[in-house]
Length: 126
Length: 136
Figure 1 (tube, chains in turn orange, purple):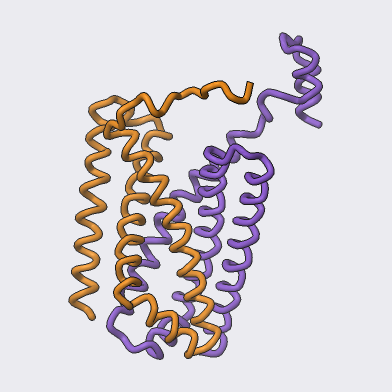
Figure 2: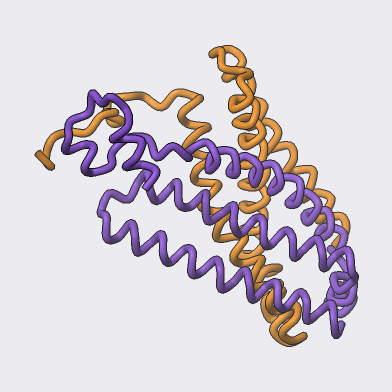
């Protein structure tokens, strides 16, 4: 019984735009849950001591830290945009294939452009 | 209790085994669904506010950031943000784990661990935001 194949047989499908956007949203969610824990720990250090705050901040503004922060920004933009898309679906709008594909492109464009704009601002403020 | 009453009161097409196991709708799914949507909307709004709050601190020395974030409104925003988003991410990870982890003991262990982990970090963060607010 346990050895029987399970439906849906994911391996026989190509990955078209809509499921691709969907799975990236999930990956972003998992990435963000780690990011929110890191932010939580940073907030803990904020009240704990100036030394721990300086230590954590130094890690976060190191090259590796900045790559992670940019990744989390992108994940945040993507996940939020797709979250709004889901709220529209939950309210009963935007189910047709054309609209769903257009809103998928909107999510992609929004997260790329949004991340670029935010980080070019951060870069200029440094 | 409710479940059993529902199952026995309907002139049931279910097998007696299904009734005994309490299979079928729990009768309260909409609430969970609706709560999730509310936390989605709140999470988006609060996250945008916190992103603006934090991006505004870029380039300032750390002691200034620390005292800036100790203000009443900043502290309040951060506390509500932590409470709502940590809850949101517990729900989010719960869905992911329920969908992909098919080993029941491991699934339960993971569900327990994320609840424990997010509760500890979230509560500690709120306590420390309060501490920073009270003695900046």
